[in-house]
Every structure is written in structure tokens, then in C-alpha cells.
Amino acid sequence: MLSQLSGADLERLLDSIGAPAFIVGVADESRFIVIYANEAFRSATGLPPARIGETRPVEILPLEQAEVFHRHYCQCSKTGEPTVFETQLSLPVGERWLRITLKPVRDQDGSVVRLLGTMIDVTEELHTRERLAYQHLLLRVQQDMSPDGIMIEDHKGDVLNWNAKFCELWEISGDKVREGRKGLLPHILSRLVEPRSFVAMLDVAYRNLHADITGKEIELKDGKVYQLFSHGLIDEHNLGRGRIWFVHDVTESRIFQRRLSEALALQKAVLDSAHQIILSADSECNIRSFNSAAERLLGYKAKDLIGKEKVLILHDPDELEERRAARSEELGRHVSVDELLHGRAREGTPYVEEWQYVRKDGSRFPVELSITQLKDDKGRHLGFLGIGTDITERRATERRLFELATTDSLTKLWNRRYFAEQAEKTLFRAKRYNEHACIAMIDIDHFKRINDTHGHAAGDVVLHQVAQALNKMLRKSDFMCRWGGEEFAALLVNTDPKEALQIAERMRLKVMQLAVHHGGVRIPVTASIGLTECLPGDPSLDAILPRADEALYAAKAAGRNRVEAVWRVAEAAREAVHGAW
Image 1 (cartoon, rainbow, N blue to C red):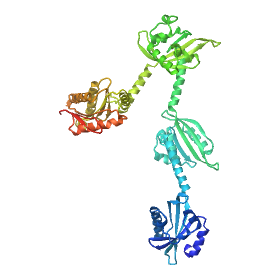
Image 2 (image 1 turned 90 degrees about the vertical axis):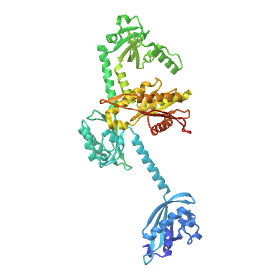
Image 3 (image 1 turned 180 degrees about the vertical axis):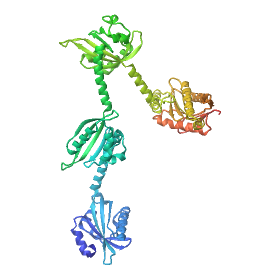
Image 4 (image 1 turned 120 degrees about the horizontal axis):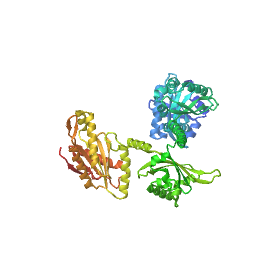
């Protein structure tokens, strides 16, 4: 249709358009001139009327922007197809993003002789898109950081979005979730103790998308308990478009609540059956009652304590004084032992704390002590009731859990994470008090050959014996860990470079002299050691380790079974102590 319009008609057409528009003349395949621009275009671009008819893009635009226009002029002219592109231009109102639409105008022979262009300012649109993309990114990050599983589903059952926690809680792959309700629901139902009630809840939820689900608990066959929250997705027309689901794992909370309920029931049973230490004291802390469980656990006879001793006889005096002093410092005033033990109980606040109780024979054991104020029917203070629970087993469990979290199971050394934590603290103290400290990286030579020749079981024996031999050599202030594979790290505290070299050499000789046997065969073992000093300017352990690694690599490169040291970063000076194979 545009091809049937004369030049004057095209100009009148452009003048009738409210948006900026222009006509580009096609002189040849590579030369284009703006032959007409309507008032809106001239106003937006600041192009004076006198320049119309003689202006090429390169004459009114920076070269880079002109090349963008020229490239799209050529594309539209050659293909004869409309072209749309977005570019940033410097206009009188400032930097703006524009969407340019070019349409070819043909002559009677079908040749493209002009290009009709329109220009729309899309700066705000692009900014809106950027903000929307950022909000989507923010939502994604929030979902990924959420401790809850999140899933968004439309009213047809298609899953629109979910986070990794959702897959983790339901032990399902993202591909399965992507299938929507038809793939997801059977998997969920197969894990539930009561799948029918879950289906009934879903039916109600999707029949009424305006209704919320708050704290619905479901139990899984593996004993886990999840809490469900759901809100309908309601649009501006008050129509339900889907639901967002939040899945919160409350298993630990329910276990804790269950244990708490059991503890309360146990407390009542204890009062009746005297399985725990139960004693009472008057307002002056004199013991007034002492049950049989207390006799059994503490070794005292009730007759020897009641009316004769205070409850303080059961406490470790050093612990009492340490806690009293700490409490005084915290409050900024003197705190007595009586206030420490009974102050909160006097105020009516439940008091439960762990203490060391001292038996008659002087041995100690941990108790969880609950102290309650005793009052008469008129509210007058009579004394206190104390219930002590032996928590020796719990402490042992905690110690075992601590060992699992901090110790390498094979070598019984600290693991890498715990070593790094303790090393950072030690290095901070060394820097504060201007003390020397050195780090040694120890690597068993040809460990792969040992595994390949003698088997992995033999390799484990080598790792264990090397670790134990080296660990026994260290002072109590030093510590080491299994850094990874056949590599160990040792922190030598209050040790200068000269002493560190001597220690490292003794460690190397110790490894070489080990008699490691497996399957009736003696396995020769040597180690290469890289050594470095912890410098005052080192901000952290991560700044020190590369030097130790550099020294270790140097020891390996120099033939193994030797000690190499890198003492300064700038000089990279090495000092080596060589060992024979």
C-alpha cells in the first residue's frame, strides 16, 4: 500500500502520525539520506529542517550509533522486509533507548526506493523490564535461601516455580516436579501416612483458592513431620489463578516437643518413684530432704546431710566461684552464691541449668538442675525444691558428635575444617603477642603407587601409622590434621623458622624410619614436607597456605623425601634440608 503513495502523500502521512517518523531515501545499496522527518521527529532529535534532505546518519550521530542505523537500513533495503531494532541515542532530553521500525517503500518495479521509519521511546519500558528481571532474580534468591520448600502451581495443576528445598524435602527431581500435579502428586502420596486426608485437603484448597491453609501437619512414613502453608494467587479481578505452597520441616521441633512432654511426665514419675536427685532446702539453703536416688547417685546418706549441711556441699566450689564472678561482671555489681543459685527462682522464673555435682568420694558428674521456689498457701517463701538429672550419657553423646564433626575417622586427627578454625584462632593470638608460628604441609611420597601395589587397605594402614607417629612427636601446643588424601598439615606454635626446620626434619626421618607392615610385607614410606612461617602481614590462614604448598611442591620436584621452606613471599627464598631415599 505504501508503494502507491507519492512522496508528498508519505510526508502528509508522517505529519499525521503523533509519534516521531522519518523517510530515508535509498540512493544506492550503501548510501542513505534522511529526506523527510515530521515535526515530532525533529523535536525529539533536535534535527533542524534545513538539514533534511542532505543528512546521512554519520553526519548527525556518533560513528558507533550511525553504524547501527546504517546496518539496519541496509538490511531493510536488501531484504525488503520490515526491520525493528532498539538502540540508545543522545537526544536533547538526554540518553534514551529508542525502538526504530523501518518499513520498505517500493516503486512500481518493486525496488525499494525509500524506507519509512517510526521511533518510539522505550527507555521506561526497558527500565521496567530491568526492574522486573531484578525482582525475578530477587525472588529466585529468596526462594533458594528459604529454609522452607516453596512451590507455585496454577489452577490447572501446572507447576510454575519451585525451589531446591522443595525437591530436597520431597526427595524428588526437578524434572519430576516440572511434570506438574500428574507427576508430583503420586510421589507425594506414596510417602504419606494418610494420603487420603491429603487429597481431601487439596480438593478443598483448589475448590476455594481464596482460602488459606495455615499450619496443616502431615506425617511421612519415614517419621518426618511437615507443616503446610498455602495462599491462593488472586488477580486484580479477584479471580483465583493458582496457589503458592510452603513446606516447613517441623520434625525436630515435634521431636523436641515430644521429648519435653515426656520429660514433664518423667518428672512427675520421678517425684513419685524417686529416680532422680530430689532434694529440698530451707530459705537458708540447709538441706531438709534427700531422696533415695540422691543417696544412690551422690553416695551420701540422707541422715548425714539433712539439717546438718547446706546444698553447697554438692557443688564444685571452683565452678561456683567462676560463675559467680562472671555473673557479677555481667551485671556490674556483686552477686552472691545464693543469688546465683536461687535468685531467679525467688523471682518466680523457672531455673534450669547444668552444673557439676560432687559425690562423697570427690568424683564429679554433670547434672541438669531444676530449682523451684517453695511457698506456703499464703505465698510466703519457705525454701527451694531441686531436681537433678544425671546427664552423663548426654554429655558423652555430645562428645561423640563433636568428635564426628571435628575428627578424621581414619587417622583420628582433626579434620581440615576444624584445623582451619583452630589455626585461625591460634594465629590471631600469635600475631597479638608477637609470637612465631610455622605451618608444615606433609605429603606421603608415591602414595598412589602404594595403593596400586599393595591395595587400598594397605594405604589406609600407612595413613593411620604416619598420622599417629607424627602426632605423637608434636608438643601439646602444636596440632595437625589430615588435610586431604595423603596430605597432612601441622601448625607449630611459638616456633621460629630454625626450630621449625629441625622439627620438620625429625618428622621426615620419623616417617622414613616407620616399619609399616601389611599382609606380611614391609611397606617403605617417605614424606615430603613444605614449611613456611606465619608472617605478621598475613591476614588469614588462606594467605599462608600457598607458601607452604609452594614449598611442598618444591620438595616434590627436588626428588621427594626432603624438607623445603619458603620464608618470604617477595623473595621466595627457599631453605632445604635433604633426606636420603
